[in-house]
Length: 153
Image 1 (spheres, one colour):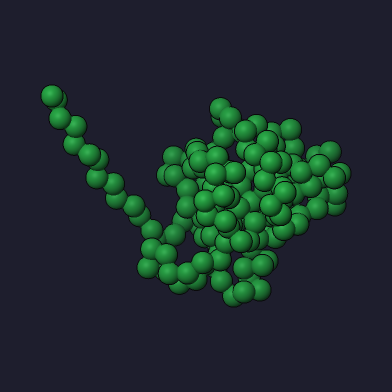
Image 2 (cartoon, one colour):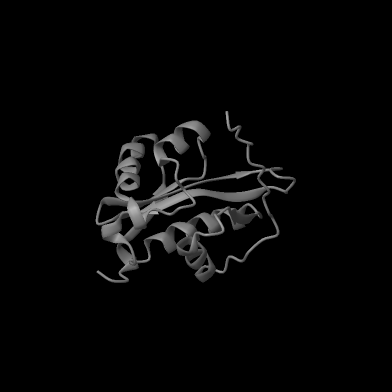
């Protein structure tokens, strides 16, 4: 099965795909879970309703998803295609499914003349490596966090 991308079908996500996405998302636990995306996929989909989302099917089985959208003026930036979250079932990883999902998303963004952006945690080496192989580079955004002071009382 290694690298048989010809059988991978990428299509737009429908509401009825959410239960399948939830199953995939729940399978991504422990070291297989991207530390950048700790929110459950079904919650992300229900709260934000990302309009440019896709599922990957292999031999008729839903094996991956990408939640994304084209939205503008966030963080002082122009319109961008934002990859909010993605996942591939552990049994189907390393077959080019994640790459196919991202490339499909990027093609739609290119047709709309917008760049694609994804926010990752600095310590998420797994996703940083993955997106680097797809020609993503580190952008110029930096976040600052102020911790709430805890009283000793």
